[in-house]
Length: 273
Ligand code: IPD
Ligand code: CA
Image (cartoon, rainbow, N blue to C red; front, side):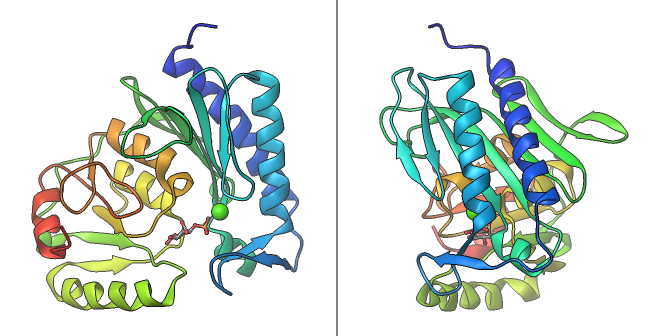
């Protein structure tokens, strides 16, 4: 079966992420219970994380039975087409648990051998659906990034970025206590040098916010592939520079997204490379 155009894959990503977004927003009980914990007692899974991933897995299997699948909750399943869907069924699970409105469904498709590795994969298309805001962020490799909402569809262009002292910088924290204390030390160094910091709690939306200029930059260490695959492409296709802290491919070891003017100054200020 020939590989479809990235735009066709993007449209499928939007369709399935929209269906999962409806499931998790309409189906959210008044009081969300923790179903299980993962890497630490605060790294939680709700019944809706599992239900959303099952819906995504089923829809994608129906549409493209030969593709692989990597989901946050149930892991990797190989395919035969060379494409793998990389899926976070709820990004921002802690927000979802508490009834905060920032959470999203993130769906990307990558070309990769075996289990997708951000060092070597090619992200072909992605969608990030934010059901609370009624916003859908989407991108296809070489075809740009868009934001769709009730007012229509806009092409995203990330500007160069302000000077470091004027930059509004988003970040996120790991669930691991040791890593959090390292992150706090970095934060203490950075805070006096920038306009301000934001910790929204949804990595995929942080990356989309860079694409739209809602923040000037976003950085985090310790992300998983499903947290950033789709948002990475949205930011990149909007013109942002997205690397690790040494200027190489972004990954679990580090991700820094910013406009091309701001990126080098912020990378130097973080001094993590
Ligand atoms: C988390 C969120 C958060 C980021 C964490 C992620 P999850 O994903 O994206 O903003 O700081 O590193 O693990 O657990 O809500 O899917
Ligand atoms: Ca998640």
